[in-house]
Image 1: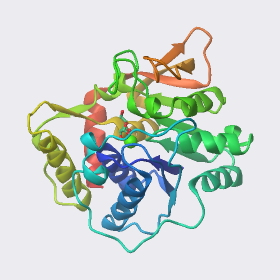
Image 2: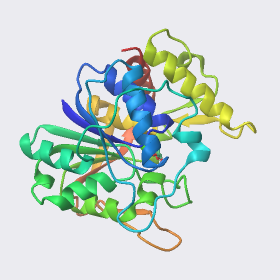
Image 3: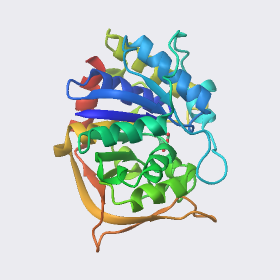
Length: 299
Ligand code: RIB
Ligand code: CA
C-alpha cells in the first residue's frame, strides 16, 4: 500500500510512525508535516530526526502549513513536551525536501490515481489545501484515514471537540465535504485502545523502535508528575492500524459537519441516515488491535 503520512509529531505520532516504518505492507512515499501539537519547525524537525533514528532517511519529509484555514493554531506542548516530544531525538543532518507538502500531495495523488492512501494524523489543513488546490484530487486518493473527532463521547480539548478537528475545523469540513473516501478514527475508538502507566509489555524490547517507544511512553507519563495521566491512548497508531487491519474495526457511512465557532467549535455532527463519503469507525477489537500495534513496534 503506497501511502503518504501527514503528521504533527507528537508522542502518539511517533509511535504510529515507528509502526508504519516497520510494516511490510506500507510503502511510505513521504512524510508531510503540519503544525498542531507543536509549531511546524518542531513537528518537521521531529519527523526528520525520527527517520534518521530509524535509519530511513530515504523517505522525504515535506513541510506543510503553519496556519489553519482560519485563525491561528493552538498547540499542545503541555501534553507532548518541549519541541513537541518528551524525548530528545538525536539531531540529524537531513533537511526537508524541496517543495511544499501541498504540492507533493497533489502531484503524487494525481500521478498515481487510486493508488495512494493518505494518513492524516494531525489537523487537516494540509489535506484540505491539497483538495482545494485541484478538484481532481478528491477522486485520486485511494482513501484518507483521519485521526479525529470526539466520536460518541466527549472531546479531549473541550467537552465537545477532539484536538485535530478543533485546531482546524474549517479544514475538517473541506475534507469531510469533498466526497473523497475517508475512514475516521475518533476518540470513541482510541480510548478503547489505550495502555496504562508502566504497562510492562510496552516498555520492553531491544529493537530501535521498541526502545524509542518505551522512552516516549515513560517520559510522556513522567511529564505529568501529579500522576493524573493514567492511560496513553493510541490515537495515531490505531489510525494506521485501521488501514492494515480493517478486520479489527467496524465502520458506518455518514455525512459529517463540523461546528466552526462558539463554545462547541470542533464538534462533529454525524448523519448516518443518509450515508455519505465518511466511514466513521464505531467499533474496534481492542485486545487484538493492541497486540497488532505492539507487534509492529518490533518490526
Ligand atoms: O486528539 C489526539 C490527536 O491530536 C492526535 O493526533 C495527537 O497526536 C494530536 O495531534
Ligand atoms: Ca497527531
